[in-house]
Length: 405
Image (cartoon, rainbow, N blue to C red; front, side, top):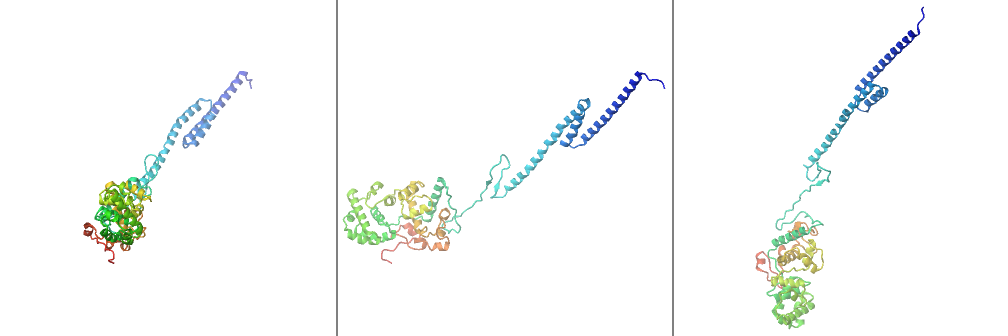
């Protein structure tokens, strides 16, 4: 064997290193290619991002891994775009309840939910109820009660409708005291306190036959007048009143009944109720007569909660035009005497039952209610011995005189 030169040995070593370097580079390239293929096959999401990060970390600082990193970065927006499409599915899911809400509109009486705009409270669609009112036909169903929070306008409308209904039932309503002059009406009204108009009408013919004028009654002997007025009750107090007002008429008004409220209330035994009876029926000047029947009915009808007669007069007066006051008094009083009684009202025969908040306090059975009717509605005579022609034409019957049985 011959000797090797130092130069030849170094060349062989360099060649061996180059070969090893190329082989290692080839193996690294194969590994990178394999990793890139796996990354491409992996699904979108976090699982695909992990191998790419590992491959990028292994090849940091070399040109080819940087190119691979840029390619991975370009793919990221595509994944985000795919993710943005997901809410569209949720929006489609939200549209489904809207169809149900639309279908719910078709069923009446159920809550209706708005399908557009911000969320709102369900609006309940109430079912309508109707009540048929025809003449005086008995009411078999319970009438709707007035709401507690009835507005002022609703109260006025209901009150005036009740008056119109009563005007159709009692078109011949009139004062139920017999009289031929303002003086007779004034005396009869004073005597009607704490008794019936019928009893007064049976008593006054004898009184006016003996004392036809204020001057005659003013000069009367009290004991004789008391004997005539005994059937009316409280005859001594009533005797003092009628003699006293007769003296006042004679001394202060020349024997004539004054036509002013302020003058009438100055007479003995005359209050606002009596004064309005005289003014409305003898002089044609409107007034509200607040007797026991009127007080009871307007409270039942919720026109007012007042108990004082003067306050009731003021409260009810604001519900009606002044021109209606006198006839309104007749309608209410007649209804209270014939149908809407104090102890047991005939609700089943009441023509205004659908308008009455107190319906049901009395007898609601139509047949039983008819038996509770009084005066001409029940086939009985009325209060007056000499009723107006219109009352007789409507089928009313005059009352019998005192002592006729």
